Amino acid sequence: MGLKFMSLLQFSNVSFSKEGKNILKNLNIHIETGDYISIVGPSGSGKSTFLKLCNNLISPSEGNIVFNNKVLSEYNPIELRKKIAYCFQMPYLFGDTVMDNLIFPFKIRNKKLDINRIKYLFSLFSMDEKFIEEKILNLSGGEKQRIVLMRTLMFNPKILLLDEVTSALDSENTLIVENIINKLNNNETTILWVTHNKEQSTKYANKLLTFENGEIKSLEVLR
Ligand SMILES: Nc1ncnc2c1ncn2[C@@H]1O[C@H](COP(=O)(O)OP(=O)(O)OP(=O)(O)O)[C@@H](O)[C@H]1O
Ligand SMILES: [Mg+2]
Image 1 (cartoon, rainbow, N blue to C red):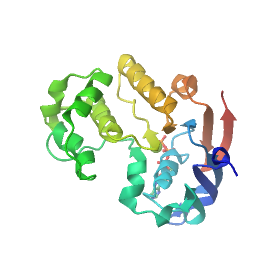
Image 2 (image 1 turned 45 degrees about the vertical axis):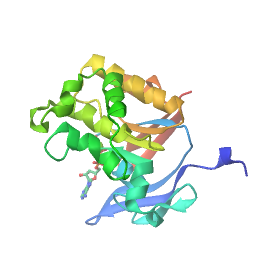
Image 3 (image 1 turned 180 degrees about the horizontal axis):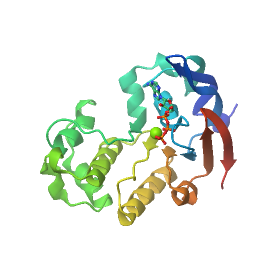
Image 4 (image 1 turned 60 degrees about the horizontal axis):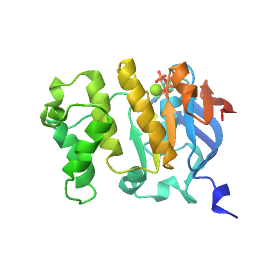
């Protein structure tokens, strides 16, 4: 079997329930290396829950999820999340300053801070480097979203899970982020991006995954 035909991430009969409520029902999907999948569907249909399953923040109640031929639960969670990185719907920053967040990816890898990498990301996002020293309390919602993205992109993940990461951005910055993500995808990063923006969902993605009532309603091939 050629590597090309093996799924990177594979859901087999996956269900997730909580407090007697069936939130996701019998999901079957193969995600291939280099896929760029837009995930759409009504509020409450299960999109964020699906992303949380993808990097084992929550585990299936039934069925299994396989990443690189190994069941997700067999991975060390920290190692797994270096490979499958999740940008939450609500931008989550910790510590006191922007730097506390940008230094974090280096810390968990026991690596020396690379200020040039940080500066490169600021230029990529067309964001002023003065924000490096800023207190997170002083950031706008859109600034927080971009800092979280930079933190997530510091070391290239294999799979990038994005949950409405441009919801607080103006159109100009949204375009910048879309282009950064598209470039990453061209360099083999697999993208799963939840968005409520119709135009965004079909712009660069090769597949469109639609959720409805906790089920996969359709998986459309776009290009
Ligand atoms: N931990 C939990 N406990 C109980 N119910 C939950 C839990 N997490 C999610 N749900 C419920 O599961 C359903 C799906 O939630 P989810 O956050 O995945 O929706 P979504 O598609 O991301 O919606 P939105 O577009 O509003 O972000 C919702 O009805 C939600 O209330
Ligand atoms: Mg959501």
